[in-house]
Amino acid sequence: KAVVHWFRSDLRLHDNRALRKAFEIAQDNQVPLICLYIMSPEDLTAHLISPARVDFTLRTLQRLQRDLAELDIPLHMESQAHRKNIPSRVVELLQKWEANHLCANMEYEVDELRRDAKLVHLCAKKNIDFTPSHDTCVVPPGALSTQQGKQYAVYTPWYRSWLAFLKENPDYLELSEEPGSNPGNARQAFPSLFDCELPAVPENKRLTTEEEKRIQKLYPAGEHEGLQRLEKFLEEKGRQYEEKRNIMASQHTSILSPYFASGALSARTAVAAAKGANKNHLDRYDQGYITWISEVAWRDFYKHVLVHWPFICMNKCFKPEHTNIEWEYDSEQFQAWCDGKTGFPIVDAAMRQLSHAKWMHNRTRMVVSSFLSKDLLIDWRRGERHFMENLVDGDFASNHGGWGFGSSTGVDPQPYFRIFNPLRQSERFDPDGEYIRHWVPELRDVTGKAIHDPYERGSGAIAEKNGYPRPIVDHAASRERALERYKKALQK
Ligand code: FAD
Image 1 (cartoon, rainbow, N blue to C red):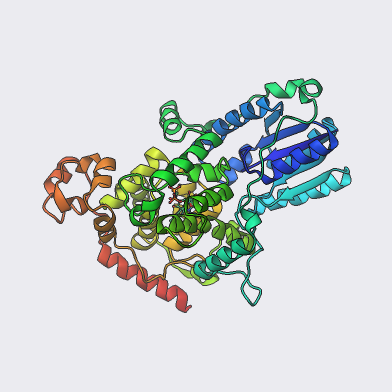
Image 2 (cartoon, protein in one colour):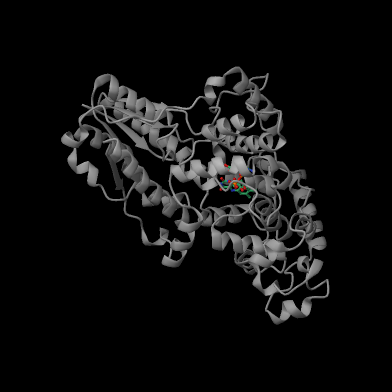
């Protein structure tokens, strides 16, 4: 007999609820613990997983395999061409290994819930115990509701309730212990499982060699790196976070999102560590830590939203009236946005950061999502898709939530009449143009405030000489157009 832990988006040993559970069951029964990971190219395609995120996952798996082997725990990895076969394949493997217990952490997206529903059914037929755990959120979905028993659709009251829950239930911030050495002799019983190769990845999900080098340097994979970054961030930048987090140029945020998305870092660990750094408070004492905790809470919020309104996974707007918005279909403008050639320096800098670093600053994510959906009036779902196809931290719930916010079509969005002015955002959050100059080399020689709008501020000659485009729309006019279209849609 054996016990199996199935890794999904929880690629770590530390503070992993289901892995700990699997270890304890194996320990109680003195049987081997085996770990499993399955990748399906169909899932990668259906969920638009970016090559950068795939690369990050593979490197994390490699590290995980090594760390597990030190504990004599094997990690079996494979690729399944058809994702619909995954549940039966898992059961088949369990039978082959004579395992009668399976543990895994829940994933809340609809495809994954359907997969698990099938798995529950198959396990029951074969007398396999399946124990799912809530792990990815600090507060599990379903734990918070309004006084009327409804799910919150607004962040602020939800966050108050999230804080109150954690104060009343401090055990939700207790970290799970890492597993120890394999309780059973897996090396003897399953020797070949220790030489498993990484799952095969289709060509279109691979980075180029040049990209690979760059991305690997920017985001070294694995939980050790995630934990180190967390510690360093809290120590060196946590206190200034509130004040500096919106400055686009230098690194004032944690850049932990790739680690959260793959599960190399647990959100619980992060919140517990920030609370520790903040003299054991979640919502008072140092505003830097308080704000950072509330940002990690946004991640929970969007996952809760997904669980309560699962139709958002099907390309639907949170509110049906937003489907009435009449969009423009200008593919040249969409391409200019993707390529960072809109003639709006702040938008272009951000989009080039995305292409190059496969990551973007939160403030500019808001600016470019508002620009696409309001200035260009292009359906926000095209932008949502482009983000997923590129981001190293692409996460359905947070990405969908962010796009819903920027395009004013989501849960707790900014009101539709609040349209970001790219120029004002640029002047406020990149005052010296450092971010723009870094990402838009055509404008490096532009001095002073002209950097924000070179053609209008006397630096058109430099911009033109270097081939920097003129603005593809007039912000004031497109603002009026957006207001009209949104208003019309909401009146229908
Ligand atoms: P920090 O500022 O250090 O924050 C710490 C952590 O808190 C982040 O790593 C993240 O897990 C969480 N967090 C912070 N802000 C948010 C937020 N607004 N929503 C949800 N979680 C948040 N985040 C993703 O992880 N994946 C995405 O695909 C994604 N797409 C986005 C799309 C748009 C249009 C917008 C506006 C935001 C999106 N975000 C997404 C949220 C946010 O921009 C990133 O989480 C953040 O920029 C990551 O940088 P960081 O790790 O340095 O964040």
